Length: 301
Image (cartoon, rainbow, N blue to C red; front, top):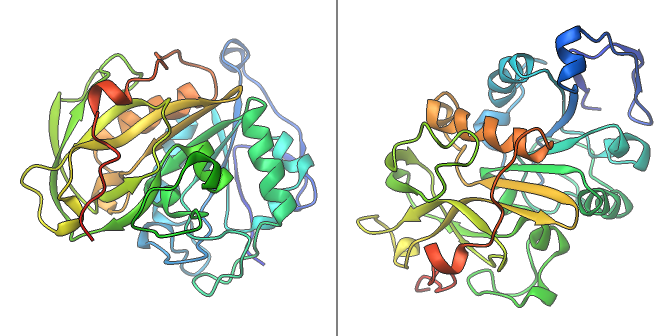
């Protein structure tokens, strides 16, 4: 069984069935509520190198998140074990950080981790609707795919409920390459320091099934990109949206280790987490039609 790695929490007991918390709170933390985050990095499909666990050591992504969480007074629990998704455990967290692939209710040949139960998936999505936060990195869009042709869009009613929560879905990616990210909301927490049009070498996802209410933060400019899957108009690469009472942040970045260490990525992620847990304000007005009016034009097959 994959173990939970608990950072900064004092646990009166450790187990997947329940989490009993005993927190020591400083005066600074009283003014700024301590937030509890679950970093879930299970791979039911391809396992990315940044979340591989070797010899019981934390994965690379976790080593980047830990000092960020410590600095911002966020408690981090990291696991690949889907059995943590019980109503009692879900209630203990303020936000869920996903770096996941494929159907998380299915067995995993990639990392051998335990799946989420179908009831656990439903409880998790209901918790987001009821006000929990969600942060999706990179392949979080390559998780719980909608039925039907992967290269085609599906109507909202035919999309997987997880995809409707996230606001977009992975189609395919081409070769790793440099692409331009256009910052369309520089007032978003963490985006003010970004160059309006910055370039990043990354494994860029071609995405579909965008929610109509996305507030786009970064646009993936496709002009000059190689590979057929990018022969399409610009489309959202990072966004936020409200899902019921919940706050959802997603960025397609996060494949490469040097992306995880880049100031642009870390600044955006800090802003995304801060907003998702309710510690920062942001404009959530839908702008997808304004900034990426042809986002739903699919690339050629």
